[in-house]
Image 1 (cartoon, rainbow, N blue to C red):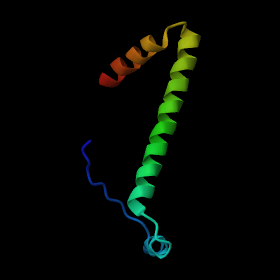
Image 2 (cartoon, rainbow, N blue to C red; image 1 turned 60 degrees about the horizontal axis):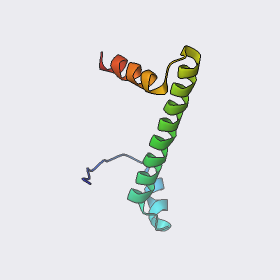
Image 3 (tube, one colour; image 1 turned 45 degrees about the vertical axis):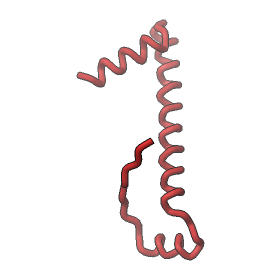
Image 4 (cartoon, one colour; image 1 turned 180 degrees about the horizontal axis):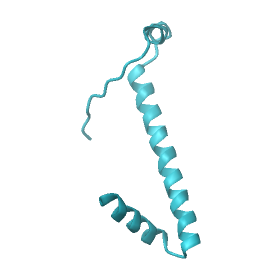
Length: 72
């Protein structure tokens, strides 16, 4: 697994409070990002499922069509 550095800006007060409570900022941000990605992937999966039912296509076919559309 390779890693990259990502930076963000936060209010000074937030950083000070995080330090006061010994919060591992990197870990909190990693977890939050992973959770948001998982949430959006689940939303996409459910959307593809609904679309496949409405159009009477397999979920794989819906995924293929979405990928094709994104590549345009």
